[in-house]
Length: 364
Image 1 (cartoon, rainbow, N blue to C red):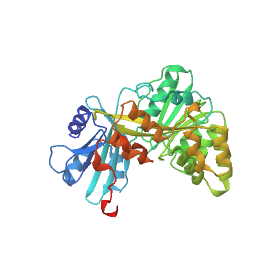
Image 2 (image 1 turned 90 degrees about the horizontal axis):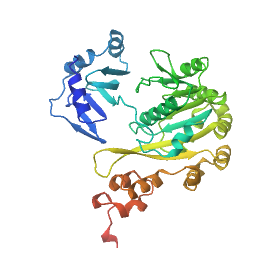
Image 3 (image 1 turned 60 degrees about the vertical axis):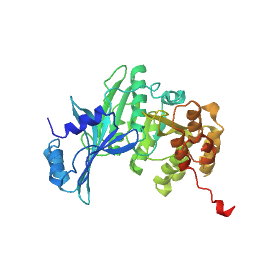
């Protein structure tokens, strides 16, 4: 048993999402979004290096010694499965372990609206799940893939860095491939997948123009492409894809999005009202003729207005979703206020006056 397993077991038992290990500080757990140290001494440089070497292969140790960061998955029957990132910083090594639940939650259990399932029912085109790091994108997509796996007789190929949730084939065949282990890059993986008779291709991250262009090709040629981007609103997602393309291909990219992008799901994790968990709150864009025209005419700044009035299509802005969750008493109104774009609308729900803007009485 690796010595680091003791920390990972503690993290799992505490219900935390992440554990952080770094030199000169004690191990820290992220529980319901907050980072808290555990009762342990500050980690020494050689101590942490020794812990990590126990779970690394010789090839991984060599890469780490050469200054590379590492992304991989680590699992043990007693502690569970974790996504791991190892990195270098000024005082030495650092490590982040993210716990991956062995049970894939359903879309219903996650409390996601019906439009998410409906977007997954498309036979071709592109559906994107976006948000900053740690907002539950992987869990939402795992739930969507599991829905397809349980209900459709199709071939699903996933490309991940690293593989997170494990999907045993059910009604579908699920082929999971890892970047750096089975294929060199996401673009290479998509290119290879097109020769493997896929129905659905899941791209763990559309991180560069080559991967984006290959994903667009796959979506245009009769496949459903599911992917993620690190963007914080649906309209910014559209801009990000267009801006990532070479200048000479941007017009073609706009046409692609207007015809093949079915929807964008952008999410945050917000503390529940009782403070014991977090709930996914999502903004949804569904492609309509009006939004397609805005993309073609370089008026993406008007997309939020279309989302706001598009409830009949299953669309909602993040602020609308936050308000709905507050009214259903599902989330902490103080955190919702901090996350909102138009904070004035949320001020009446705030229970902690210290987070409200200060009024300058002297100027009255």
